Length: 164
Image (cartoon, rainbow, N blue to C red; front, side, top):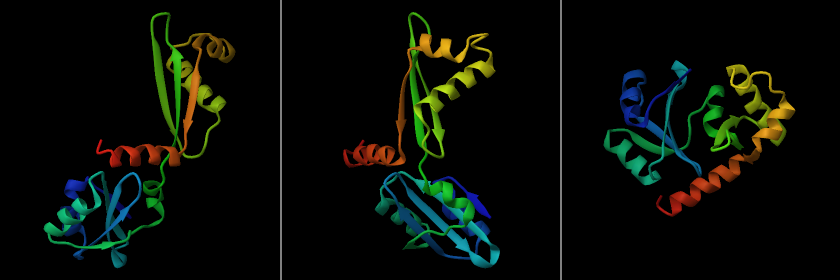
């Protein structure tokens, strides 16, 4: 079982739910993942932070936990370690305005899939009426961009290094 908490409540959640004084930190390009677990309880407390690694370690240690490199994990934690693919569509909303639609995907979508998902969302919400996919695609003048997890992490890492 996994208890996901905001970073500011991590140490308190560990104290309340586990009888350990150990926390583990794992740094990837996008964030710091903090975890604590207890095998006999089959429980993991997990959180993430965008703070620098040393600041995360210092904060947790300052609140009384021993900090080690590593990551407690059970099967349902995998999504915390995986970045999604992002599909973005820029489209003509009307004569005066363009808009952007964004969706996350667990695996790489095709550009066609992304625009079909946009069409289906608009169709299901009643925004399109009897417009066919082909008519929508033609009138929307859509541009599709798919970002991979690596591209997302590279953008984030670049910003972090620039201090943004």
